[in-house]
Amino acid sequence: MNYKKLGILVLGAGLLMAATTPFFINNGKLQSHLNMGGFKGTNSASPSLSGDLATKGYVDTTVGGAGTVTSVALTVPSWLTVAGSPVTSSGTLAVTAASGQTANTILATPDGMTGAASLRALVAADIPNLAASKITSGTLDAARIGTIQTTADGGSHSLKKKEYIVLTHPHSFEGTGAVPATTNTTPYFGQAVFAAAGGVATNYVEYTLTVPEDIDTGVNLKVERFKFRLGAADTGAHTYVLTMVSGADSSTYDSPTLGQTVNLTFAGDASGASGDVETISNVILTNWNSNVTAGQLWRIRLARDGSDASTAISFSGPLVISYGGTQ
Image (cartoon, rainbow, N blue to C red; front, side, top):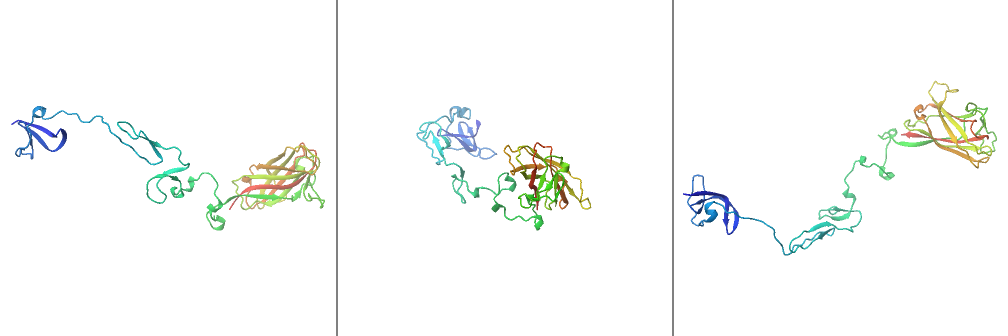
């Protein structure tokens, strides 16, 4: 017998198909091998084989190749456009996003339900729950904050705030250069009258108070405003000097050593007239925050430097100092 194994391919009606059982050529006829022990008979309906199939056990063939269509079209949602539709022989269907869509819309499924995705406005339900650390700028409305219970009230939060000390009148006067205004019918009664000449050691007033209990020593103190009155027509520059001491218990009350000097400078008023109000503002009190202790006696000295350019007396006015508070 002449056996040639065909493998798993069968040729029929001009088509190449996969066979589920190995086939063999037996003397020009197609037979199957149904078990490993040998042939189980022959297929009497098998066709006679000739040509390459009879001699080689296979047939050369070419499958595939280019083709054409008569008409193929494509439809897409309104937020897309199609170019090249329909294709009537050969070609490409190109899909792009349509222009002219409503601003600030997103591609999403319907709000709160399943459905096909489409363009729509963003809604709150589209935003996942975010950690507070994701919010890096902006200001929260008071209604969004709710109630904050501070540690002072038994809570777990520290409330940072800006507080103000308003020193309206001095408590003591140096008495040589700086003296009190004693005419009780004047608006500046009780204020200091600073001499136009003389050094800071003989031309000052002092304020006595305690360091605020809620002071946050991590925040700089600042002169927000110092108001003073010109005692005469005056266009010259003024210089005032602030010093202070925060004194612990058992330290001297009467004559403490003051330090932490900060100058308050006024460039002058080109049209300054007698009785005009002038202002020095926004001066950082450098190192004051690190040299005070809550609850201690606090002595603040305000002096006029008579060596400045002004040759006229001046009157003290309110001194406003801000500090960081915590609760």
